[in-house]
Length: 196
Image 1 (cartoon, rainbow, N blue to C red):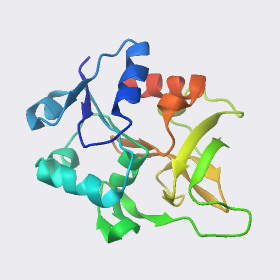
Image 2: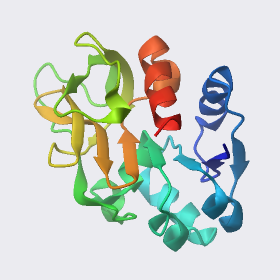
Image 3: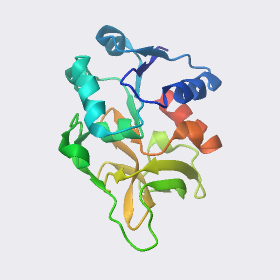
């Protein structure tokens, strides 16, 4: 099975790659359109901001490549947000494969933005990506922007209100948290993605 990590400048690429190696998948880091199209599984990692992330994909000529993929795709953290239609962060047009916009968390008493740390995943509907996930699954988050819940939501979290933690829309999937830093839960979810 050919797994590729899209080299879109995310700073979590090394840790995602190592997490995949622990699962027996040696993911190639690439910005080559042909390699991305030929892969069995495509992962779009990312840490940073939506504007620079989309600028990098445009600069590499990968926007239409990513939109046209028919194999399973997984966006991680910022990578998940880039799968959406729009981000409030720098008013950024994103890939648009998930028909919803990403919003900044509202500041509120007792809520410090960014949302940073462990939070509970609550499944909202069954999906193979969630196989074996129990009711006490926790994942590690670091983000200031989030996707509201909707028909695309597989699992939600609460931070001043519900937001999408795991999403799926056709062959495009996303995890807002860092599975590579989420211990056994993250490893299980990455394994489930590799088995889709």
